Length: 499
Image 1 (tube, rainbow, N blue to C red):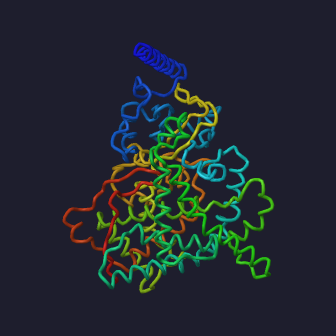
Image 2: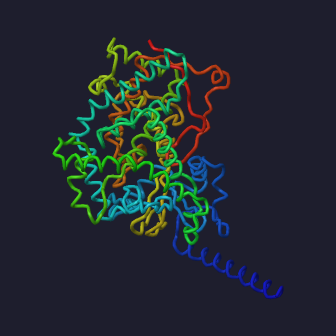
Image 3: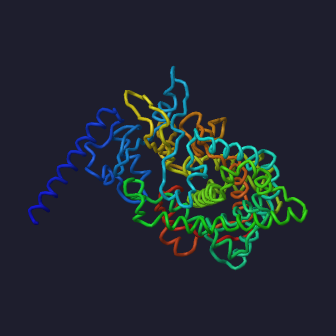
């Protein structure tokens, strides 16, 4: 019996070694971009990722050795990492005659998104060549993000965000208590989104619970998952991430499901329409019977609320650490708004320095540091090949800090966007991609560009900010965590003082 076990183990070792050699030969034939060589058996380059939560920095360091276009293998799955503007330009202009061809508009499969079959409906999982994905994008452009709805949301932004934010901050200022910047910003954004989608809102305690659920969903999406690295064992869900995602999605969809029931009854009773997004969904329901609804609240909450709140936290970090910049922004707000208690959408055009602060924020603190993509065709670039179906990670964090494109790239310098700087948010120059680029550019960009100036202006216009005593002694903990959204490990807390 013992000899049989030894013989089986021996054959297993031979089989695994043979598979490893086959993998090396296959990789060589594919002419993948350079990377650590040889990849370690089974685990690939996982040990090269370094400290957890620092992948964006690790990839940037590895790019210094292997180039802006490099290959890494996570477990059994090969990835190509794009870390410089030149590499991104080469990938996007790989068409005939250097034509721009977005051949990395696919999206990698994430096991957690298979919970409740969510991957078959969410804009963040559907292939860009899929009819459902096109329908979702079309619906977003025509309804949720249409200019008329965004224009209509201007009043909501003032009432649901600016007033709520100002009221909350005033309460803390009166009590002299510190606020967690990310939470105090995210709550009114969730109120806005609930209003736009369903013409409803949640009580404060319910909203706080809802916020925590959204934050956990975003964290799960950015968690390294054994199921994604070793697809043959994905069904086992060894880390329990899919099961946890299933329970979280159930919480997120509950308000939607409940409101659908109420809305159908009100329609049957002949009550007036609310003309929100849900009414549009119900109008088109018969067209979508076979496809399922095109409204996925989790997509909107995660992209709209979590990423914007994270950006505002980074904004306050950078402004507190750069008091001259904060002073200039506050002086401009005082000069333009005077004694006006609340900022409005129409004020933004008269605040060029605030706009420059926001552009620098989007460059330096890109909310989605690693943008996941998948090659939808074979790509020949710089003598290398990215085979169709290969996962591609665009290191937007590194691209936005490229030293050849940006002088002193690690510093927060809004002045670089004054004096005629015209670089686009749309990634057309390939060296600033805060919202991504190509067909997968963030669909929530119009909302973000409306909300961010109003929120930041509200934080600065009527309030001075002071760090708690213990933070003044030790300084702000700048340790960051790279998931879907780049966040601080230790949330920033500060004390508002109303002017």
